Amino acid sequence: MAVEMPVVDPEKCNGCGLCISVCYCNALIMIDNVVTIIETEECGWCTACEAVCPTEAISCHFEIVIENPTR
Amino acid sequence: MVIEASFLRTSPYFSNLNDEGLNLVQKFIFEKVFQRGDLIALEGDPAEALYFVFSGAVKVFKTSTDGKEQIFGIVRPGESFNDVPVFDDGPNPTNAQAMGPVVLYGIRRRDLDIILHKHCQVTLNVINVLAGRLRNLTSLVESLSFRPVIRRVARILLEYAGDGLGPHRRLTQQEMAALAGTAREVVARSLKALEGEGLIRMERHRIVITNQKSLEDMAEVSS
Picture 1 (cartoon, helix red, strand yellow):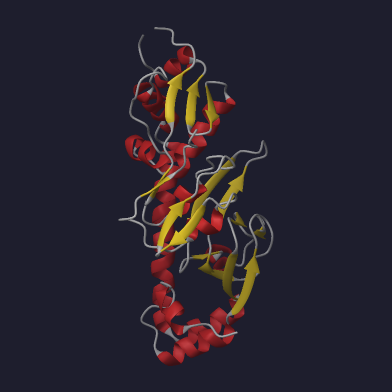
Picture 2 (cartoon, rainbow over the protein chains, first blue to last red; picture 1 turned 90 degrees about the vertical axis):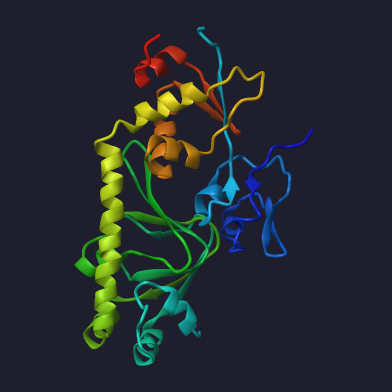
């Protein structure tokens, strides 16, 4: 089963590589000056890559769910 | 060690500085290298130098006595930190930590004084930099003290919550910040606070509302 990973918008990525430097699980690599994500279960969704990106090219989406809806 | 003049020109401190000034800056600057998690500056310690990030990212933050962290900002290449304690000779007001491998260029206060006396362009640049810092901090103080951000974050969570079965809109922390009219750092802190109060549980790419009633009370949503 595919592991959900952060999403990179190649149009916005300026290839600065900051996200790669802060990723503790080495899930990000640079290909042709654009950051590319490698699927890994070690990604703990720390969102550091999203936080450091100066161009808002990386998105770490959260699904919001209610555990026991009251209505 | 050769510090590129082209890098120095990208810093707001040294923009529009002539070649003579840049040569002087290059003479005084020293390099420091840190690895992920290294503490570069500790709150309360004397400030060693003004630092410019050459590569990597640095987290500037404070921690409360009960361990809660407030991030003041992430310093990226070309930007500086430690400005305030270097100029007022006081202790570090915040902590600074390397978020990954980091290369910094530093300049000590006494050397900065020599540059400031010889090149008034740098003095003008410093005023601009510090005014920008003040503006950002004013905005952060406003978000933290005057606006009930946590209430708005609670409301956003309830508004965007699904039953976990069908597809529904998902949000990044950046989007939550935009919706709440605040900074991403304030949203991160609000989420931690809500988790600490047992109203939500943070999972990998999921925020689970564990106590809907209390979250609604927090958001002041009428049922």
